[in-house]
Image 1 (tube, one colour):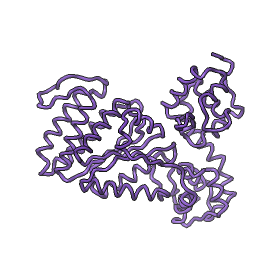
Image 2 (cartoon, helix red, strand yellow):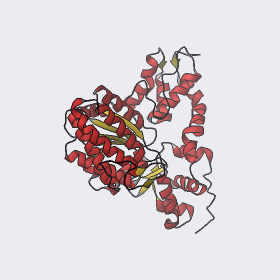
Image 3 (cartoon, one colour):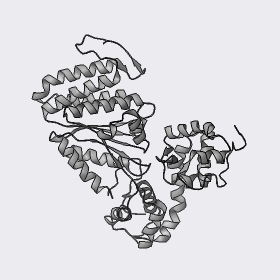
Length: 399
């Protein structure tokens, strides 16, 4: 048994001991946050990519940069069934209270809190309803139009931040789960804050479909956000992610072992962390060999199949399962919906709703070329493991 606990962190969004391959993105984040802190407006940033590439980890690393620069920030993780309205309201309340201790901003703080109070009363997060007026007297009345009210709140906060010589950053993870009216409201609020040169910025992270969502909601969103793709690690970065955490604890990898890990992980950070963590748990020597890697592959795959992959597969209906199996039977990925329809022996119109549901659930995404692919790396391998023949139950259920 090893003397030290594993230096690898395969948990969702867990910060690895050594963050490889993202140095350029973090340097750029430093510049952006410093500029905002100095009063120079910057484009907000959206990190996008597949599951397991480290978007959340990158977002957390930028949060550390914000902490170092004394930027006021808060982290919001969007969930499909949670209200973004209550999350942004609670986050804003914390930020306003933190600024209210600054003498120069106290007067504006009363106004910001009043607007926030009106906003919270108007938008009932528990019942998902809108109410007119306030439960107690206030000089601030919300309009009941989400976009207008969130904009007013952002402007009030931004002016307060400028007076206090502070900058505000909202970190929003899983941003693709925001409802369209919430997304539109956020974009409008950010747009107005930029026009007034107010020190507010957003760092978001989401699946590739966020590009289309933002474009559909507001045509000018491309000028408001900087879109940065987070992909698999380059070969040198993958080697660093594998080797460097172990070296600190006196453990080394043979070159053939590293090559085997690269082959199974394909450079995806989550798979590297999970496989290396499994190797660490199942071996004891100070030198890790190719045979050690080969020995733990079944354990590694079993972990992925029972956790990372199964969680997503179980969210799908039988009809959606058939659609996924049909994607693989098309031969090459990405594939077109017409290819899938042909495999299923159905009309495109009859399978289009299933495609839309799978995109909504974040299982597949449109690649932008009229084709679709999985949002989860190596999901096709998993589907082949659980259904080697790629049997489709509804193949005879023609429509």
